[in-house]
Image (cartoon, rainbow, N blue to C red; front, side):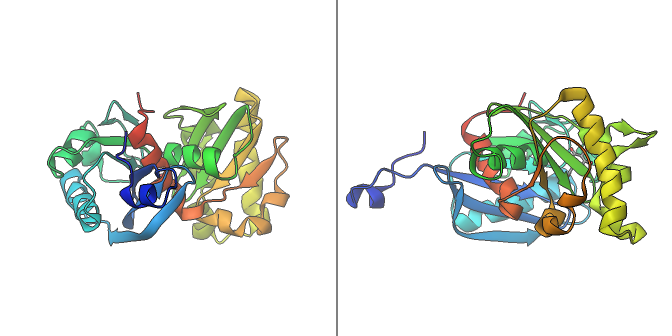
Length: 264
Ligand code: BGC
């Protein structure tokens, strides 16, 4: 439980539920306070450069700088771009390999005088946020969010409940890993048109829908900002909608996870 906000009590309004989220990415570590009733950020977000090499202790120190800049002393959620079970990092596809086997929860908490830390996969965080406040709002059933970036991240949510650590980006599709076929970094690297790239995305979506029959796909990641250029080119059968929260989704989902433990 967060403590009531004295200012809103004075004004007679219902106290705001607040959380704090940190989104760890390859280039930046971003944090903000989140209004958990609306999914909006409260005030500015702070972004510091991700230290290189992005080892656990260097990243934990940068996270602590962001948290300290807000004077936040409560529980917080932190995203990580790989599999995390019970706070322990299991994979490091696009980040420093020294993360594997690290208890990220403990390493980060130790830099923060023992503040309670929940660590979850970055796409899982975005999925939680999009499902509650964004493109998945009001959609019951099985929702899959995919983030297209350096790799492909995935979140699987059933009637609001996250099934954590799906790694659809590493599914083998036609003899290749999905993310090597259809991440947006592949489009950039190869100089592909949207037409050419969406053919690969379609193959990935079809592989997922044939396996689990979702009701809705949400397309996230930076390239979802240009959704009008490519979503209509997709030829799979399940509806695809662009993400709505854009680059706040990770922060918002991390803040949500800090109040309900969605990891396993
Ligand atoms: C990782 C996922 C992550 C995604 C986006 C993939 O390579 O395996 O865990 O969500 O990249 O960062």
